[in-house]
Length: 156
Image (cartoon, rainbow, N blue to C red; front, side, top):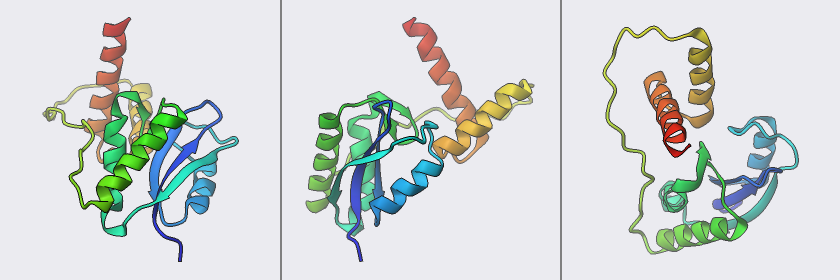
C-alpha cells in the first residue's frame, strides 16, 4: 500500500495544484480527465512528500493557507515550484509535529436568502464554478464569484 502524500501537480500554464492522495499517479490520471482550471494537457507530478495519515487533511489545508493569496480556484495556485515545495514541506513538518495548523482564509459573512432574479448565464457559470471549486451550495459559489469580480474591479 502506498503511503499517503501531499503532492504538487503542475499544469502546462504553470498553475500548481496542492493536494493529498494515497496514490498520486492515479490522482494525476483523474485530473487529466477533469480539473478546476480546465487544463487537460501534460499535467505533471512535480513534488510529493509522505504525510502522516491522521493529519493528511489538516496538512493539505495548512499548505493551502500558506499560498492562499495566490489561489486561482479550488486547489490551484499561481505559485512557482519553490513556493509549492515550501508549502508542502511546512505542512508535512506541522503534520509530523501534530500541529499547530493554520487554515485558509475562507471566512465570509453569511448571505441571507433573497428572491433575486439572476440571468441564466450567470446561474450556469456559478453552477460550473460551484462544482469545480467544491462549494457546498450555490449561495457560496455566487458570493465567491461576486467577491472575485469586485476585487478585480477595485484593483483595475
